[in-house]
Length: 101
Image (cartoon, rainbow, N blue to C red; front, side, top):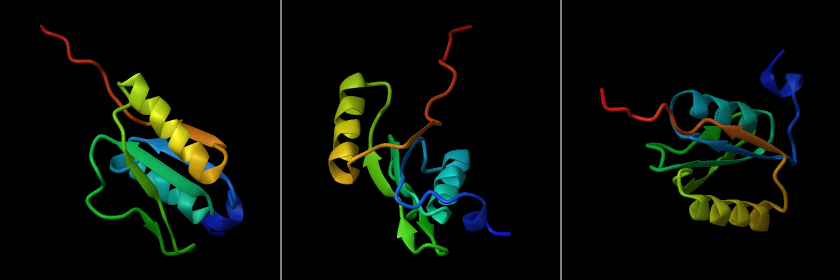
């Protein structure tokens, strides 16, 4: 059984923050394989496009720093304007704040 048989996200829009590297990239690729429209955001563009050979779809990337509320609002507005909806949000961005020792 392949990924496409497990979950079908065709026509759904999925946002993955921090979706360009590591676990976020794997999550983005999984949802692409499941047929979703995937939108990733991060502070830096991916080194190579996030693409599914199974569905022949590519994730849309927005350079967005989720620590800045006004940038997040603009990002969300653009996603809704482009796709008309958001069905799934995976918050994978960020990490523990740095603390002086």
